[in-house]
Image (cartoon, rainbow, N blue to C red):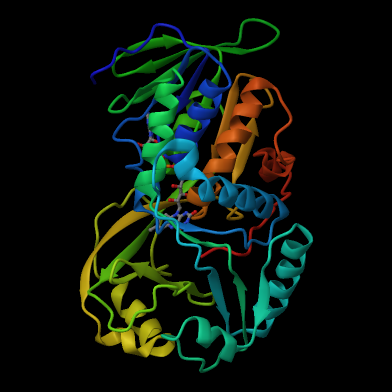
Length: 389
Ligand SMILES: Cc1cc2nc3c(=O)[nH]c(=O)nc-3n(C[C@H](O)[C@H](O)[C@H](O)COP(=O)(O)OP(=O)(O)OC[C@H]3O[C@@H](n4cnc5c(N)ncnc54)[C@H](O)[C@@H]3O)c2cc1C
């Protein structure tokens, strides 16, 4: 491991993806002396560095809009704050809409976003094509666009947070899996007493669960049901695309989820596979490619001629309403959780790190995240995020 597991910690952050790393950074920077973060593998190697790196404030849920917009501000200043370049391209996110119901939904979302200061707007199909010339407008009814959205490099964001957290005094241990926890329920107020790891035990009364797609098992150690399922998503990158404009927006056909953004001289392309089933499947396969090719031939026909250069598979951490789980366990005040962002957790990570530091320190977070409490499922108070890719 290279570093020793401390015997005691003020807080143990489980998971070294963007959310855990940002949380550890904010806690250490605020002066908490003994912050420990554990990851069973390398930082970012879960979902964060498998993501497409898309960053945006275009959501349907007010909490996600506020957090996304806050995250954009952090990312805009990331190099100055953390000394780490992240290749942020604010080329905008362009959602292509071919269903009248989706147009109405996006119009309502754009109105909400505008009321919160996000400069998103509705476009005609012809306007959309001027921004993203690779697309066909056949069957399109409208589009939604926000110029401050875009994409950046997840590995660099992880590096920036990990380095800054260590400089602020946090102990970050990659390659150290947590294996369980002790909870003392003998008194009136149950409390966490320790986290077990493959390198020994660390005594602590506060834990942050930021274990992404693996959170359900980890929550179970504390008697907390976090309804998060792993669902494989795949990405391909292409050979160079002739004439590719450097300002091509992140372009998403909302109805199929087919999307692309510039990646070097080529494109990064993704799409959901309706046949995919939950599970910890991390290998690539070709079963999704016929659907992807259909979508490309229909929506971006010239791409059907471009060669595939590479690709990878990763896991979405999916909840029943495709919205995040953030809060403090009702019956275990030292247990905080932040997971289940169902495919938009990378861009929310910078803001969520601040939110989680606030929860650990008993402060009011930058936005009221009460609606993200996991208790919403017990009461069937679902809170769907509609604008997911
Ligand atoms: C193909 C794909 C494309 C995506 N595109 C985007 C996008 O464009 N924009 C966006 O915002 N989001 C995107 N996402 C979603 C995004 O990647 C996730 O929402 C986000 O990375 C979640 O961050 P996290 O820190 O919660 O989880 P992770 O990055 O998965 O981190 C969790 C960590 O916990 C560790 N862990 C698990 N169990 C244990 C244990 N027992 N002990 C110690 N450590 C443990 C894991 O090793 C892992 O590193 C995409 C995801 C995929 C798969």
